Length: 580
Image (cartoon, rainbow, N blue to C red; front, side):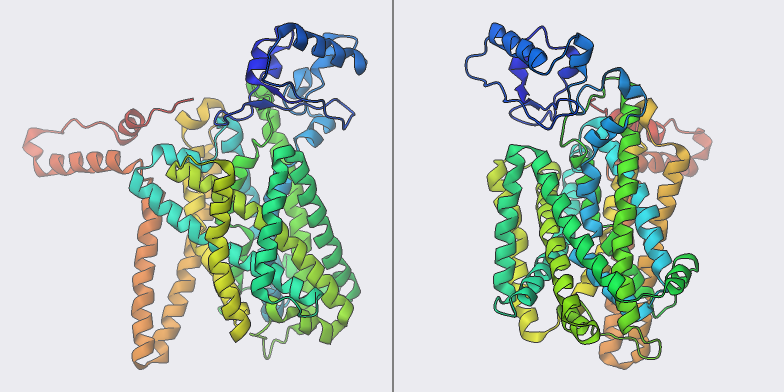
């Protein structure tokens, strides 16, 4: 049942544990509930003519119609809102009710950008990078998705909102610009990938630009499902992911993949300078920047009963379990695709450089038969459609959180969709004319990896802050060190890739090669300067500056003795009180 704030306040018979409000920023506060063991939803009470006796009658009708004999039985009605006494211990039923955010999060690990990376890895590295997929998705991905989910659950606000509150205006605009590049780049891959699938399924009758428009229109209408409840949208996501899994799984089992090669690729780490670009592209395709912000928001897509530390702790357990299940599932699907292309197209003596989403269907038909081509297109279409929906959501929450734009939901949805659609259609026309989408898609995956730290670093800062997370749920030091280490690995890998490209350009000689090397060197300096800025924390810069200035004064005037300066962390705490 959906009950608004005023209805709840006027009904003294409703237990206080059921008065958890879903979202403090919503103009119309809503509480959702489900009956245990039932899929029925009860009609919501209307804001017109609130009447306490009417609500009391509704309450009595609910209890009698579903056979509740006691208040305790009624306490178990809610869907993740009031967990009652069962909240402090694990419950399979409560876990299933909680599930949904991990399903939506997993989309970015299964989208056309990932399929493009799978193709490149399989065709250029064979089975040798399967271990990297496991580390990137199951280890790296799990750590950062759980960190983002933890921030959202504990504070009730997403990462973009926290950054919007604590960062100065210039830092917010810069961060939004970087994230918007990541979102638009991902949207180009997802939308054009889906358009390629439509073209395959229609025998080329639908051009890429028209396919992009069709996908965007269907995504817009599917987004309207959240008006009827987030569960409906989750069902659509689950159905499309299931279609993708079945279609790509059929290709895997029909391709006669050698199990020994797969096992060796999973347990024996191998990487070389030749496979580094596709490895970096795979990392950017798997752990996407927008998805960190996305998960921190969708964990609160439904109300949660977290009015005690014990209940919150159990919600965090549920979130981790769902994330791990979905990430392992996504990892298996990616392995399916890598193995199919490794078995069919990998040649260590002459690695293919022209294989990608645009040409994969024809290559599959030539190597395995037309059935493989059809199933590939079905899986690609399902992946692209669901990813386009999640990207639109991500664009909305980043825009509202960082820029503080207060616009109607419908207008915001159209605006964020058009921001991505216009460059996508332009690129689709260009790619169809030049057949260069596969090269551009791989470059976009590398760009996602380069932009990834601008999601990881803010998440690391926020979850390590006691003012934001509280004493109980602030990240443990070991976990903060672990995620900081992973971020350092990502930065090192990205930096080495840029350095390697710069070195190759310099070695090629000539004016053009030297100019490109200088340009790449400048990009490397700018890149690490920006990451250092967000690594320190834009909100920490003033305190750090005063601290360093005090040290300089002390060193330059030793006869005056040590100057009294506020410790950096104390000054930061004074500047940014956290409004719980």
